[in-house]
Length: 209
Image 1 (tube, one colour):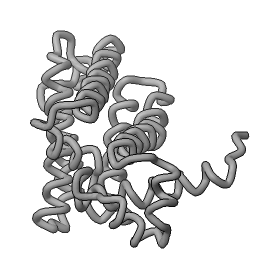
Image 2 (tube, helix red, strand yellow):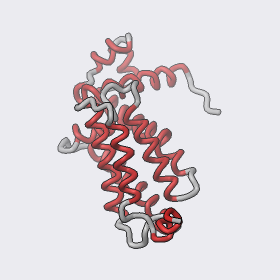
Image 3 (tube, helix red, strand yellow):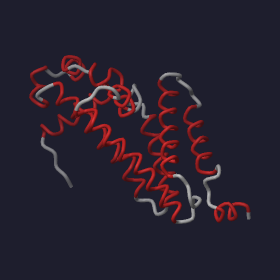
Image 4 (tube, one colour):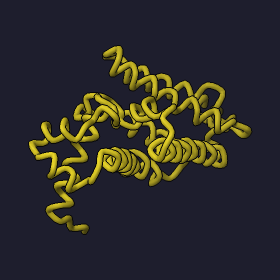
């Protein structure tokens, strides 16, 4: 069991609020003053935890990535087969995007839009995470291919690209369009991604029998 000091707990609580606010205002739009007002803390108190706005931004991004890994990626990796890993990963990611506590949707998608042309340490850190995320999806798909769950010769990089695209569309449909059917549409798209020409002949034969 990991025990947290009072200061560590306070910082974690601040970061959870900051992540939610950053998904709405962006990393640049989230000021120390705005966060102080929301958390009921003084600006000096926040500076005591983070030191600068840039340090706060990096802490927000780092915390969001670690939270994403804990809630979305790690549980999926515990599944036994590549196909069940992909299904669990998609389900976890859908829940992560749809969570009510973050009014601005997925903070990592929001950060990707904000930082795509803003070069610097934040941009580089997010790019590194993005590459790892797509590679995670690709490796799970490749595992499914090796287990004869998905067809041999599947372009797993293309698969990861389309997998990621469904999540981007879901986030946009929920946040911008307020589409009540967005989540179901996302699951329909995922089912088609798994089934349409991607299933191995052996799996198709088992399903047809």
